[in-house]
Length: 423
Image (cartoon, rainbow, N blue to C red):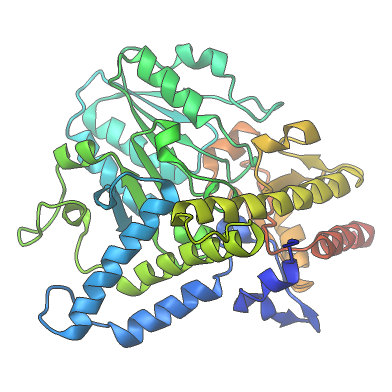
């Protein structure tokens, strides 16, 4: 079936918002997408049909336990994990990373080296910086080029050595939009460290725009947040089972040592887990409706992949229209890949600056027009600093996704031109 963006928008109740007599334009997606109807419905179902704690000998508690099991199965298929015990849920990617930094840090010794990058969201930098300070570790940074907006992988040997014990890297940048070759980085780190380096991947920005396959990447941990891929405000972590089993979990005495429960602090948030399951079901619906995955014999994983591939074609068309339009506006400087031949190495998150223009003022103007964009560093402290913009208000960030339309891109570009004319 031909990709029908109107029908897809019908799956997102939040897109019905009207401002100033016109539909609101949601380009704030890199900070949080709208929720799919399937996720909302699942959350309502959880709060009304199985609202009970776990471990009881009564129907609602039994249903709640099944919900938790089903959510783990859905997340397993979403990232292509081998076992549901490798899936840990938590408040968000940053909270999960702080938790894992504490557990992992116990096994590192003074003089061990860890590597973070200049392109990452601060949620995959500061937890490791604090861990390094507390444990007496050597901290190294993998830099990127402010001209190409990519890592020079030929320089990996400058930062990854036989003493490297952890490499924390983002799958896609929430500032530049660059998709990093995390598979190549993981392989190089394993070789250089003699297999001792752990690879920790932040896939938050990549998750709504690409297929996650932890088996193919070769990483040891991967984290993402469901509110970036059409679900609720909750996060998930995948870790290799053998590693999670060995790690010390900071937990209360009554909590089990079984996986993944030993990393769950307190009562699980079942409505959020139901929402994540609903978000995965939305990917399945997309795969069946627009990805050709109609054969009943297909697995859920195959339907998810088909759904992602269907949305990607639309994503890339939106990115090209947005970047082309911005390049036609005098003075605009796009902080990311603009070569159409290289668009497979970026997500549609587009950051830009204009000379003598405050990003916050542009974002405020757009907000008043019912066009929602972000400004500032967006927690990308390292990349915005590396680009020399941390003291200049950062960037304007526009983030279309698969439910946005070409007409919305044109509306944004038109509003930007009007803003510049009125200055």
